[in-house]
Length: 104
Image (tube, helix red, strand yellow):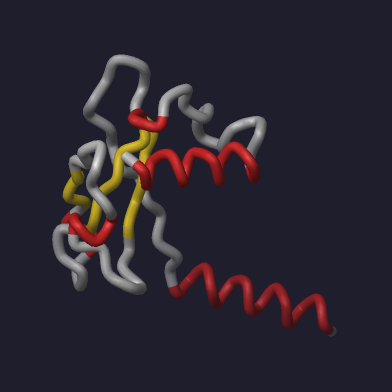
């Protein structure tokens, strides 16, 4: 649970009014984590992880540069949906075109 507490501290510091999609939880235990089911095919979704009070990220297989998602469970709920938006090449191209147009 240490990782949830650390993340909640950071979120409270950086987003005191809450995230754009949800309020910050009252309890760190409401923060849930997941890793990709298949690293090369993110469309297969996320595998939720259960953290015990003494578990550390390395105990759950976390590695450097690994994609990890978090979601905030509603009060009294354990199940959450991990909604992650991945940037697309189209978005990057549009951003580049907009930047070029503003430079003109």
